[in-house]
Length: 353
Image (cartoon, rainbow, N blue to C red; front, top):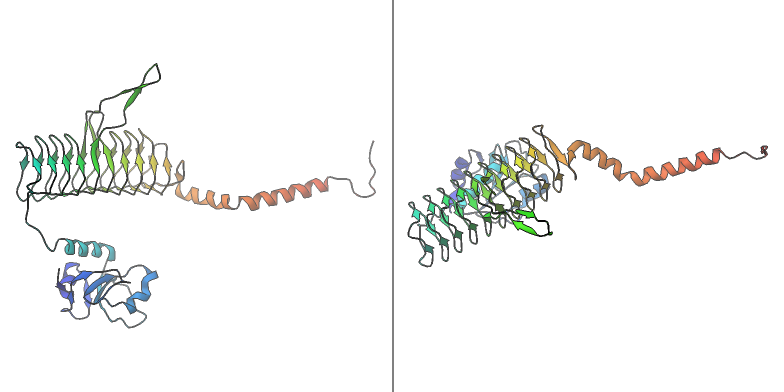
């Protein structure tokens, strides 16, 4: 992509300080930028690079006040990170490619492909599946029977989408994610072994869901495991059967959610969080990394920390006291020793028989 500072300013609805005709051909990190690149500045730790960078343009906030002269053109915006997202999307989509069905792909005769669908080499699309227009299916993807995939999706290499699962519009599923794997269902028997419980449901991803690499979403034992519109799932997440996740919830890597848990809308869940099954978590809940949630969260906007998770503010107060525990114990022992000494008879005191 080759563009100008003027065009980029219009793209992010910004205000330009500098020449509008400066040529920009790439986006770079501020500490690595070279001539012809655009970078961004938001974290104060990187301010020194604003004055030394070789970038031709820098995205900054409206309230940024330089302490030294800046060589690069400045594009001032209301929200730097939102503007970066817009900018990077423009660079990614700058060179659209024509739809191609690779001759090494295996597509069943009953499959319905809408206009402008791409399918990569060694991908398999099974009987009765359908794929919406402008969707890109990269190589070595498996799509099971009766799967429905919406329009404008990107399915990266190695993804497996099993039978009867439904993928909405504009979804992104990253490398080696598994959608619709069997749920963990076993019934214990009298002789101590386990009998497998068939998992006959499916997975539904609503529109604009993004799924990270190696994430597994189990099919419902009956009914659907459902991921709401706009959810963003990181890499290496496990979502068990019949979990329901509301709209625009974001979940970081290595989180595990047990069966039939219900997560609300607009929740933010940190990395390595564990959530037990059959509980409900209210809208807007924020859960700190490595927390364990073992009971219902009924209050919207709750902030949780710890294992088992408690109120975020209560955890920080308790942790501050915990860190002082060795000092507190030492002082307590000193006080106990002084008290014991005060109970001993003084010099010359009479001892009663």
